Amino acid sequence: MEAIIGALSTFNPLIALLILVAYIVIDALYAKYTLDIANYNEYRAATVGSIIHFCIAFGVINYTENWLYIFPLAIGSWIGTFLMVKRERLKKKKE
Image (cartoon, rainbow, N blue to C red; front, side):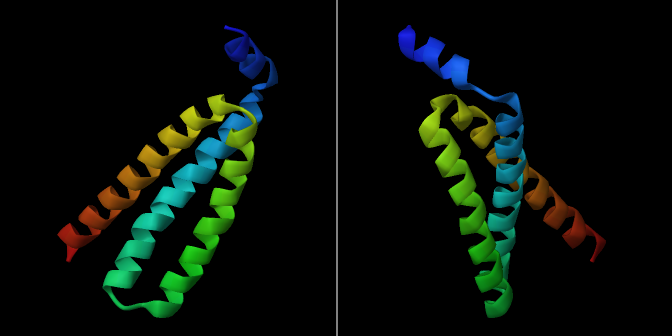
């Protein structure tokens, strides 16, 4: 119980929002990264991979300090992947 109270006392909603947005971007970038690799776009894949790891560092630094930040991380991850896959599916339909 003390762990939950301690985590809640140091939880910052702004940081949680930033983590949520960061992981929406990260998972969208992961989907883009995978597409770039599948299409042999080495420069784009390398650039996107670098950006992904930079953003991941932000999340890791924050959720290692407070485990509650894992929740916006997971939600952001789901949203990012969902939006990118949906975007690609709609793009293919138009072709």
